[in-house]
Image 1: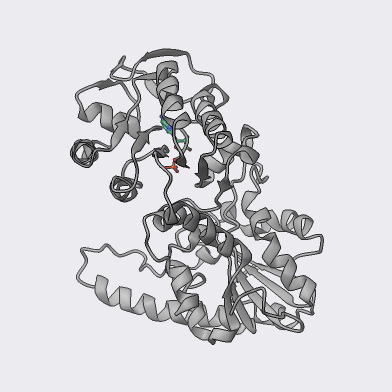
Image 2: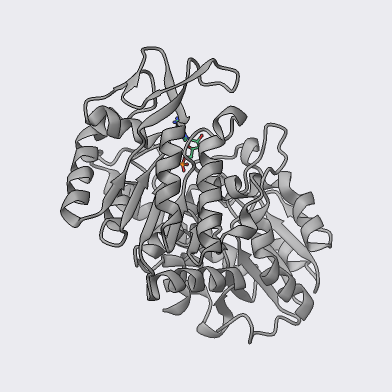
Length: 415
Ligand code: AMP
């Protein structure tokens, strides 16, 4: 079924959205891209005369109730975005009554799905090495099905619109689809749009294709970096990952973030890039600080000559120029992850420069795709969102889709 064809009048729809929005210390939303992204689907359901049950995760509460990740914090923002009151179900697995009482046009937001370990379906409190692990996994899969069935019981139809988590086979993103027939489950508008944007890139890659991979750790991005090597012409490595590469090549990185167990991996990536003829672009200088703070003392230095007690928190001016030049000559651009600790005002310059170069390349005809919570927050912070071709709500999901993988959230609907 497609959402456009479905008439929600008199129906209760349970919609998986990705409202994993960044919050500041006071619990205020700092970037509402993901809420805005889901509005077309949510509004269509209400406009048709349907009742809406919204479910999402937030953060990584690891299967436990944690007020820091409560979706109660975003009820008012969702209500404002929808222009209608939003009821809140404080326990997502005990919302039967609230769901049953919903009338057409009414909205119920469920508490964070990940307060239950069943959402992710990973056994808790047991290590993979434990002989009892396999049994625990089986038991968890069974209770995951029960959990998904409970969520499904609230509604007549299911809409999957959480692109940001579509690469996960979780209770609410995939397993739940088993409890609806093909005529009562569908992708939402955001999913359709995101899939289209990825298709636009993959169908006909205009070259040079440049990927800019930033963020904190190599370990979380290793697989995608490897896969990108067979697709891109230029691979720019930025952010905290830089220092694992620099150290691996024998450089001095002071107290910069580094994954010592990934040094060989970094060298291996450098070798693979060479073999595949990919231009791997690494930083040559850094903006360094004597503390992990916006108020730290700073200076610029060569990326491999960082003094003891100092750490690289952004790229330096020479690197900015190198990155910007590569970007400006590109015809397809994928950006995931900031070049530095952009949350601190004094370390935003590199990310801003990269964002501006992408906008310029886009003006000159490039197709640019920005994805991942932090890079999206960057383009929004710098007012550049309208200058890029497409801002995705997905990070990992976008990257996996670009790799050509079938996302479980999509497979569950189409099967
Ligand atoms: P990720 O979630 O892996 O995309 O990483 C995003 C995070 O990486 C942001 O919160 C940045 O503050 C952080 N980051 C980027 N550059 C650095 C750096 N040089 N040192 C420490 N953290 C960094």
